[in-house]
Length: 283
Image (cartoon, one colour):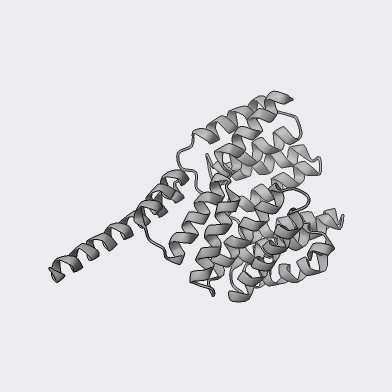
């Protein structure tokens, strides 16, 4: 009987592990609700499972449940930089979506966990990027500041030179050093010529500066680099809508984007695309 019990436990563990792997695949396919369902069925309570649950909730826009799940993940593995980083992201979104009274509290927690993630792993590039964004955007009384952002930008450049130039471009733009910002974006593109995101960054900035023809040429370059790229379609449509031009083309791009079955969690969500479509209707 003891042997049968062990076999049952082993089978249950294997079933749970299979469900967790399937849940991860569903998450990568942006099937967040289905991923959550499998995780609940698995009954597993590892740090990785809590983190994946948190990411599912995060992508579904339930930031309270997301932070609760990330807290559990970090409690299981307190030295895990990824979990601390995602917890910072969760509190960051709670700050953005909460009342003016609770937003500062959540913003401070976001900063704390971004800083913790970087302290746990100085090579966590995504955590460095989010910490840079926080310092760049947050007011001084919440721990932000351009000087702090500049120090992080240097750390970013130490392990990703192109990303470091992008960070410096953002700083230069905030300081109204527009020529320097453009130079930094072009340098980033030169260092990573096959990364379509670097071309998109330049195209968006040129549009922001009112240099429409140059922006269109950059978007065309991005399209040639990666034909049918969802990020290119979304970014181009976003620029058109923001500037209230080429709205029919923007609508086409967004509809095509929403029909794409190969979107990943790193791409803007279909909900974001729907929001942009509603903006076209309101123009």
